[in-house]
Length: 202
Image (cartoon, rainbow, N blue to C red; front, top):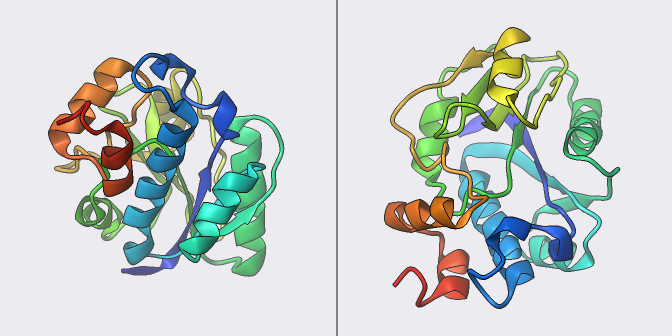
């Protein structure tokens, strides 16, 4: 467990989330919520703190049941991450604050732990395509400087962050499309996502 690492996870208002998964399920908000809950539940055992940045009361209530704090934030992914980063950095100026995407429904706790092991400087984990970012870590006491969006892996590398590459496919596998979801099914979904999708992945 990394007792010096705190994570911020941005969670969109559920009715706006995962628009590219229309047709996969009749209840896309429930699927987006399941993604976030499975992601955060997998992360909790290996870091000191996880907070979510969300304005959705359903997300806030479900996370509270897991013992996870939620804070409201501004619109926009990078803006919400900067807000959450500021909350966590104010609590411990010397901590490592990381940004974890909320759509990693196959995330394995052991794989996240392996990726975090020994990391001390600014670093990021690229997605499976190598162009996006699923995890971004600040250096202790320094800025997070998120540049999520198209080409974020290259942007984070250009800003001096080290790429984390290793045997952790579940950490690199965010889900935006039906194809992504099919591959995540093969990795093994978290219990909440599996429940929403059953029998889609069965």
